[in-house]
Structures are given as structure tokens and as C-alpha cells.
Image: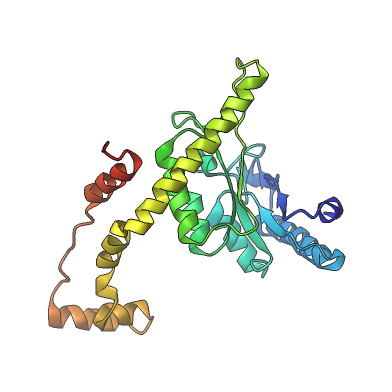
Length: 268
């Protein structure tokens, strides 16, 4: 951190914490996590002591080298930080490809961290979807990248964090230019994804559809539920008086079809 301050770094990353377990027979979970929280507390105090102005970041990872990591995903990491009163000092450095290690979609942790205003940095790498491991290929999937960029734009950017090029060339790619082409591919992928996402947001089609989906929470019974002013007894009384709420289709196929239009627009 002293070196980061001298370099005027904008971020300081706790990279892939090694705290986890191989067997539950060896560990006291809460004690382990409280020890980890003490490290993060001391780091935040030291940052203030030396006057380092960079953002502190933590990168969650489900496993490797441990069988299971305590900070396995965005939600578990945010919960630990909030439980120990450290959430105001840290944000998350999300590597979307890690979500595939837990059979979740690429963009899952990005959206989860953003939902709690904890998204600080994104690793622009990818992994083979059929491979349950960290293959760290250079980003190339336009669909995944567009979903990530849509989330980033909707939260107003990443401030100090930004994107990192975390992809690696394959073992059989032995020429220096292979790395060049890999990183250019990742940059081009996310650059085009940025344009796709910006058009999605500016057109307003998704925004209008989402507003319609949640329209029942804008007034009446739904608004009172969202504001936390209802009890289960109130819900039962409402159903007795008004009958079962009318089911609304999720229109999943409609949303996916709209999304495909922005990924591969028709030629003019």
C-alpha cells in the first residue's frame, strides 16, 4: 500500500483471498472470518493513516486454492463486510468468469454487486462455459460483455475502478503477437458491448418494459408492501377481499428477442 501511495494508484486490490477450508473438521468458520475482517479493518485504518486515497477492492472467488473460499461470491463477501461494519471502506473487484464456477451466468456477480452499490472494478476476461474451471481466456463473447456494460452504465460507471485485461493466451499460442491480438480482441469486445449497451439504454425499450413489470408496486397494496408497511395478516385480508392477484407473464422470450436485436442489429 505504501508503494501504491507513491505511485498515486487509484485502487488497491486484495486479490483472490486464500481464506477458506479444505475440510469442515479443521475450521471454526466464524473465527476464521472474524480474523479476515480484522485484516481488512487494519488495512482500512492504515490507508487513512498514510493518506492513501485509492479505493480498496476485494476480489471474490468460489474456490482454488482452497476447496471452498469464504469470500466465494459477491453476496457472501458483501455480507461479511457489512456484518463487520467494513462495507463503507471496500468495493468489489468482480471477475465475471468466476460465476461460472458456481453454475451461474457470467454477469451474475456484476449485477449483484451493483445492486448494493459495491461494484468497483471488472475483470474483462472470460472462461469456457463448458469447463468448470478458471480458463482465463481473453473476452470474446459479445452477449456476456453487453450485459456487463449495461449494468456498468446504469450505475453511472466505475469511478476509480475501471476494467482490467485479465485474459491469458493459450499454451499453444507461442508468439508475442498472440497476446497482442488477445488483448485487442478483449478491448474490441467490450468497446462494442459499450455501444450496444448505450443504445439499449438510450432507446428506453428495456426501461419501459421493466417499469411496466413493476407497475403494481407504484400505488395501492403493492406500494405498501414495497414500503414495508404490511403484515402477513394484511396480505391475507387483501386476498380474501380481492381474490388472488392476476398473474402476469414474465415475457422472458420477448426480453431475449429484444436483446438479440441490440447484439446483432439488422443491416440497413
